[in-house]
Length: 333
Image (cartoon, rainbow, N blue to C red; front, side):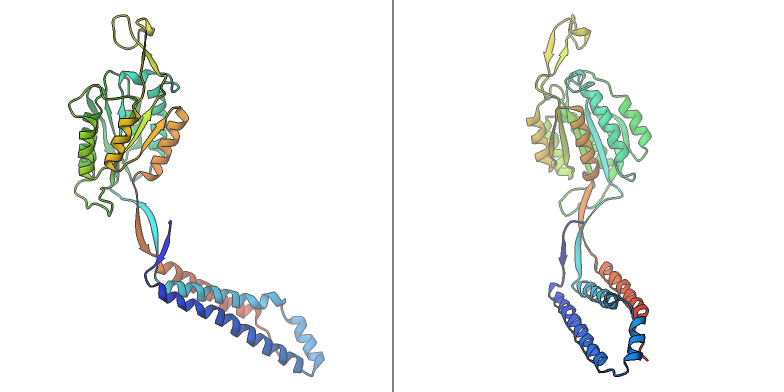
C-alpha cells in the first residue's frame, strides 16, 4: 500500500468531534473534582479513594473512545489506498542469450553460469501462482519451457542452457511475445495499457543473426502490451578464446576475441516497450537484478476503498473503551 486518498474528504470535518469529546471529558472531570471537595464525610471518602484505581487508568476508556471516534470519522470520508497485487494469470518469460560470448568469464564463473544461478534464485522467489516460461536464443530462438507454475521444470530448463553461436535478439523477442500471449489468453488490459505478462531479456551483446531486428520485435511487444525488462550482462573487457580452426573454445589457440555488451540496444528495447534496462557487471549484480524483478515485474497497482478497515478498527476500539470503562468504573457509596 503506497498512498491514501479520500473519496469524500469534506467528511473529515467529523474529526472535529474528537477535540469536542476530549473537552467534554475534561469538563466533567473538573465537575467531579468539585463534587469530591464538597463531600463532607472524609472517613468514607478516604475509604473510597483507597479503592479507586490509579489516576491514569481513569483516562484509558476515554483514550480508546477518542481513537474509535477518529477511526469512524476517517471511515466516513471513504479512504482509498493504492494496493499492489499480481493477476492470477500473470506470466513471465525469461528470454536468455546463449550465444558463444556467454562463455566469457569476466563475470564469474562465466556470464551464462552467473545468469543461471540468478535465474534459479528468481524462480524460487516469484509468487507461486505466476507462470514462468523459458526461451533461449543464439542463431535462432528455442522454447525450452512453456509457461508453467511447476518450478522444478523451470530449474531443469535452466540447467540445459549451453553457449552456442550467434545472437538473434529480434527473433528471440518475437517468439517470447507469442509465448506470453498464448499463456495469458484474451484478457483486458490494465489502466496502463499492459496485459499481465512480461519478458525479462538477458543478453551480453549486439545482434549478429536473425531475420527480425530488435526494435522491430520490440514494436510487436509494445503493440501486444508486453513490457520487456532488459539486462545487459558483462564488462567491456570480456573475451573468449578462438579455436585454431575458428569457432569458440580451443583454449584460445586461435587468439582471444573481445565480447563487449551492448547496453544501448538493451536500453532502446526497454524504453520502446515500457520496461526498464539494467546493467550487470558482476554475478552479485545479476542476482540482485533478478531479485528486484521477481518482486515487481508482474505487480500492478489498483485503487481500493478501505473504509471497512477503519470501520472495523472503530468497532474494536469502542468495545475496548466500554470494557475499560467497566473495569475502571468508580464506585461511590
